Amino acid sequence: MNKAMRREYLAALGLETWVVRAPAAPALAVSRVTPARSTTTVLAMPNFERDATAQRDATAQRDATAQRDATAQRGAAPGREATTLPEATGGREAAYDWVQLRERVAACTRCGLSATRTQTVFGVGNPAAEWLVVGEAPGAEEDRQGEPFVGRAGQLLNSMLRAIGLAREQVYIANVLKCRPPHNRDPLASETTECLPYLERQIALLKPKIMLVVGRIAAQNLLRTDAPLGRLRQQVHVFGASRVPLVVTYHPAYLLRTPMDKRKAWEDLKFAREVSGRG
Image (cartoon, rainbow, N blue to C red):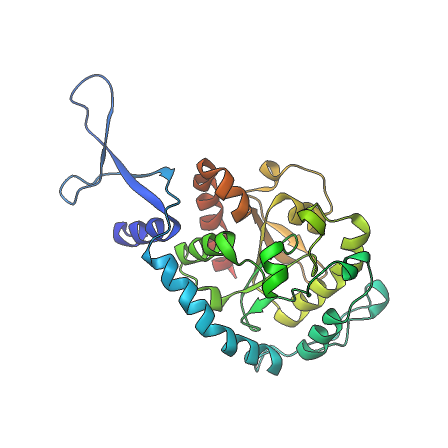
């Protein structure tokens, strides 16, 4: 990647760019990049100030909502038609198209979360997307709006995607659970068991080239492991019978609380982009 493109990616993610210059004394001196003195680029501590780009993203997201909803109602794009899956959890979702699956999720009462939700959060994005982003469950704002990853965490996710050259509208975004657990508690095993077939059917309809799973809870549920997130990063996992490549990184909400780990997330994003390019 050339230096200009790298600087653009880092700026989109909210990372400042620094360089190391030749020392004038025995200790190394670190200085900001200038066009005449640029050498090797390294990642510095992240900056979470919302810039004008994030505001434009929020406006663009609202403008695109109607178009995305209409596309989702029409189902998968030509060339990405639904296929019949082997039976899973009784095969109840195996034959659903996009419209039928959305309706089934909206009416779901399989677990107790149906009694506490405001509405279900099905998913959003391009139904022919090559990238599928998966989180653990809706939060309070998602429960109110019916769309995954909104608010500050959603803005940061948009920046993370933009850093690797993707717009929110180019990917598909969903959660393991379609309903918000009360007080944002971790999903119960029984809730995940009942809800996972919906995500599995979404994956079958999408046929994504890669899954980017954000956060420990989502990763552990999908990979059926109790390994910490740090041990799951920087590896290519596979999901399901179709063995979709799966890469794990930090949840945007965690990065808002722990900005120093944005540097690691940037490495994960570059790794996911490289894995996606292999196909």
